[in-house]
Image 1: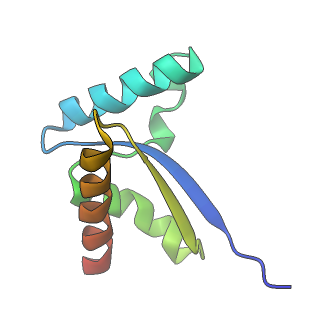
Image 2: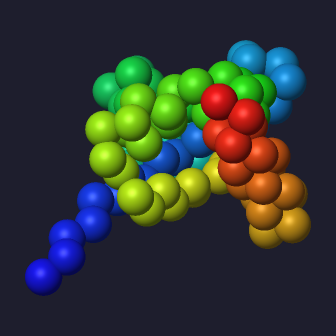
Length: 92
């Protein structure tokens, strides 16, 4: 039996790091009804490159599946952000 490891990340993407934080914080607070600060150290936000750097150690540790829960206003924007992150990971 082959076991694979995976990780799901909530994240906020924006060239303005504070705007990226706001996006993901609002979504997580609405979902979990807890202060964002309880999750923040586990949540990447910022530019695609910053998010890729956050995720890289998980990949180096053997994570083979990554699910990105992108805090965006519409599905198209979420898909575009996820693609930018995938491209940034490939450059590492």
